[in-house]
Structure formats: structure tokens, C-alpha cells
Length: 352
Image (cartoon, rainbow, N blue to C red; front, side, top):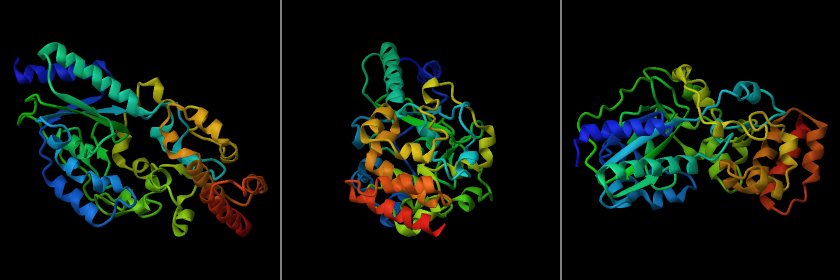
């Protein structure tokens, strides 16, 4: 094999041409991240994400997930488009729904995985056949831990990865390989959160229970995306109009003044989802939901959870006869989950 340092530099250049904004290398050793993850599980902070517990051993042992792995290529790709409605203007308008900015356009999973596959093909052309597997938030991978170890940034108090030059608005991906790419020249990024607690203070549900520790059971992203059952009643008023995910901790992070907008047109908003009208979204039939969310990360939650989330937002909106009418029109919805949240929303509207 050619000189490792030269190959690493080639991989970095190929990554740039494929649209990745930063590339780093690390070994399969996770260090302190292993113990932190196991403690997080032991405390039950993963909620109903049973798969986190089920595949815990694979998450902390990359070489078990993909036998033969000795090095990991970690990449990130900026996703925040320039052409989107200002987030706070949406969050502060209770007639609109707020959707996490990562989900406004095309689903990143396929896009990034295809790019990683192309990267692997370029490497293969250079070194011959080698063992590898690409991951983009799609398997038991502690991606933020890997990225931090690869020098892409540091894990902030909100548990997202932060980078001094570009903030936190980016996706992560990995290429597990059997190539000896990782060396001691890989520099782990220094933590620059300091005494700042902006993300902890802003969290609507106080899900960041301690610096670097998120109780997913209280997190709006978990409640609106991962949870498939009833949203706890005591948390519903705190969700506001956030109908798919939550970005508050990123919006207030001082490091995001250095954010780098994406160059990927596929991440631009679709269907006015950067500032959608709640009543309009609530009117979507299941067929319309599936059609409008084709190729979007939003589709994975299903129509019932979509309506559940919107109903909560409508319940939190100021008294509005049009919202009440829209809710009443679906009061006999086939889903018990949807009916329950509509009933709650109507009760809240009656109190306004």
C-alpha cells in the first residue's frame, strides 16, 4: 500500500469534491465515550428507543459491527440552507408549525450514503479491494463520539457536535475500513463550551438535565419523531408549535454565528415546510402526506404521528375558531392516538 499519510490526503481531497465539508480519521477505540453511553442507557434516558439498548455492544465495538474494521473515516456535511424562513419568526408564530431545519428538504441518509460509496470506490481504484461499510445514522454507530475522536469537533453540552469554523448545522457519516489510516497525527478537537449554558437554559422541556447529558424522554425531537405512543400530557404545553424536532439549543449556541450554509440544493425547503400553516398541514390525507413527504426524513414518523404532533401544536395556539373547526373535522379519526391528542387540543382551545 502507498504511504498512509499520502492516502489520507487523497481521501480528504476526494471527500471535498464529493461535497463533504470536513473529513477526519480515527481508530475503533472510543475511550470515555463507551462508559458515558452505557451510563446513559443504565439511567433509562433512551426512553422507548429500545434499539439503543439492543445493539449497545455493536455501538461500542465498531470491529464487531463490521468485522475487520481498524480505522474509521468520519465526514460531515453542512445542511442549513440560506433560503429558509428565520426560525424564531416561525417558532413565535403559533399559527405556523416549526420543523427542524435538517428535515426541510431531501432525506440526507441516501444522499450521504451514496457519496460515501463513491468515496469508497475512489479509494478502491487507488489501493485495490479493501473491506469497508458506509453508515449514515442508519446502524449502531456512536457517530458523534467517532467524529469527536476524528477531530471534526467536540460534543457540546447539548450533546451535538460543534465545530469552531462552522457551528453545528451538519450531518455526520462514517466509512468503517480495514485500512491502517488512523495515526497519532489525528488531533482531537478541544472542548470550547466553557461556562456557557445557553443550550441548557433554552431547552423548552429542560431535557438537558446536566451538561452533556440529554434525557431523551423529555426531548422534543424524541417526543415528535422517535416516540410512537402518546406524548406525556405534562410535556405537551412545552412543545409549543414544534411539530417535527427542535432546534432551540442550536439556535442559541454562540458557536453557530460561524455556521456554514449548505451548497446542496437538495436540502432546500420543500412544500413551504420552513414556515407551514398548521391548519393546512393538518388537512393532509394519508395519501397526500406520503406524496408530499416522498424522499423526506419526515415520512418515517407516519401520518398518525404527524397528525398527533400537529394537534398538540394547535392545542397550544391562541384561541382560534378555524383551528377548532379543523380539529373537530377529524375528531372521529380511525387512530385512537390521533383522537386522544385532538381531544386534548380542543380542551386547550376551550381554555384560551
